[in-house]
Length: 416
Ligand code: GLY
Image (cartoon, rainbow, N blue to C red; front, side, top):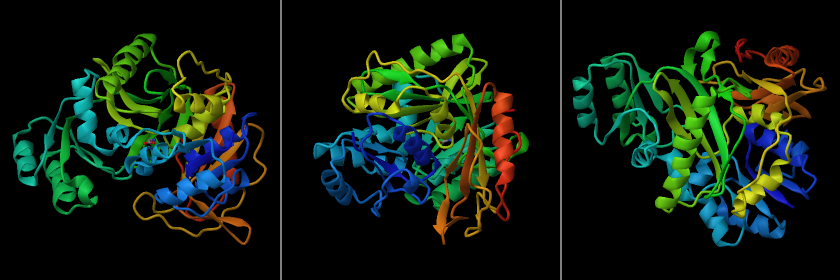
């Protein structure tokens, strides 16, 4: 089976690494890919939003399955475009991708389908938003830009002044462009968080092992929000909470898809928070998480490729996933200045010959004169498996210490 992965980051590197191990794989392709992914896959120079060129590539390379990594091409309708030309895609339709691309759509979908989530209202203009904020007496409060904002469109506002600033930034200064044309004002929920992902074929869902991201830049969950500074997998979930996740989140999600005729083949990723009133959905994403995927892939024993293909063919019912019985920790090494102003172009040393059970997935690197240099905010996900979390952490941090580049930063408390 010939496979094309769309994307270029650490998530796609981890997916490529896992799919590469499949006995049913023919040739693996990834576009645009990266220098590191090119060690596993053929990476043509085609942009991920050039759907016509992607279609032509799929035909010429006899691609059997396209696996879409990031949300942007999904929100632009890559699945609808390629499916209409008879190409099988693992990734939801444009309408399904609205669950991530519009916070309003997601919250209203949850509301219509009785999926547990925080109370919210939709604010369509800056003047209405200001009025609502002046009426609000309870802080903190959450303000979310409606559209995609590269993970930066959510502000937890501790005071009225911060909430008014968020409205001004999102709705008037338009720091995220049209994504801030409306905002969601949402109840703040406190508790531990977890990332629950499931493969979905529109009818059935197959849960992946639960993971946990660490979103803040600094140890102790301090500093600004980032795309994610590290993840661990699997994470133990209270059985009662797990039952609620299955029945009130996943089953109601599937029922909602059917009722609302939303074609959805891909990953549903529920960002959950465990409150005293039970688990609630903070947000939906319609793709694999990053850096969660880097910690999930090594703990899956099953061949992933037939499962992704079964989703694309609507044959997921009855499929199971076998775990490797290991625990995985993935530590993100980021550039100096990340997340606001990452410095790029710094030579990286210590990347080669990781110990057994250690994998270095590249999020933002390029090759210069046969050596890797930094090329993004999040640079590497140093991932290790162990018999328990303590061993996985020890191995991941030992490997991270070998890697050096000027200004590198990483959290020391991933998994604690
Ligand atoms: N780690 C969070 C995300 O992928 O959106």
